[in-house]
Image (cartoon, rainbow over all chains, first blue to last red; front, side):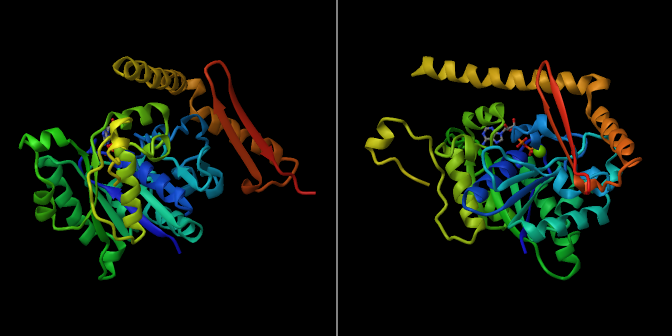
Length: 271
Length: 80
Ligand SMILES: Nc1ncnc2c1ncn2[C@@H]1O[C@H](COP(=O)(O)OP(=O)(O)O)[C@@H](O)[C@H]1O
Ligand SMILES: [Mg+2]
């Protein structure tokens, strides 16, 4: 039985889709079978981030409405054979995403994949609730910025109240994934400190993903950063986060971009 | 170093530009959007189903879009 991981945040633009793709690819690289579901109906973009936009034929809603079988809608990654994508629909009819339909799809995927990753839409409405509904684990993507932390707090409340786990009196395992962390701004004192965010939200840290131009390059190319540039600072940060998801206990570091020449001479700090 | 960075950056930006051009050309035109694929898919299936019993999981539908050519490939496994 695979585990269901929801990548969520409340706020938009914080790095959910980037993280879902990067973590999914990193978990697949470690030998596990992974499927990432795009729950952002109407505004899908996981297909773009994963470079599969030209290959979408069926989507999640087609499967739910019975126009396609699940295997027909899964798109296998061209670079990583253990990685699959289930795209969102472009249709504006969000109501087509039914609770029962989603439950069935996740049950089926859970039976064949080690990880089912749900890329949540922004907001705290129906779409976000559906995405978190069956989660065993949640990665709450938060930027070091006041409104993002507040929205994450609301999402944590929803994870504790609205999920299947919550309804059974259990808990979704919650992890904080700080993304778009800018070290230069941190040292200038104008950015919320990691410790402060952890203290306010009081959930354990899964990783710190530095702000990096490499993420933009990867998305231009349509490749998760962990495939496109695994040695980059965000690449290494996502790889260690993936290891923690697998239960490994490793210290949290903030990976830095390795300077090609000097980094190596100095023994290039690893994450 | 900086010059290389600039060149490299322009390079992925160019890839992004090309990907977007292809994608948006398809998404903007009513006739070429995924609805057309959906219509073709179901009408082709209906036509075949008139003569041969086929289950939808016996059908492979693949698509690839490029700038000048899109392919819709439908493989129907006909029971013997
Ligand atoms: N670590 C990062 N460094 C730089 N840019 C990032 C990083 N993470 C995400 N981004 C950029 O931020 C934007 C929003 O990211 P996205 O993953 O789409 O967020 P969400 O899914 O939460 O809306 C995108 O342009 C993405 O490339
Ligand atoms: Mg997103």
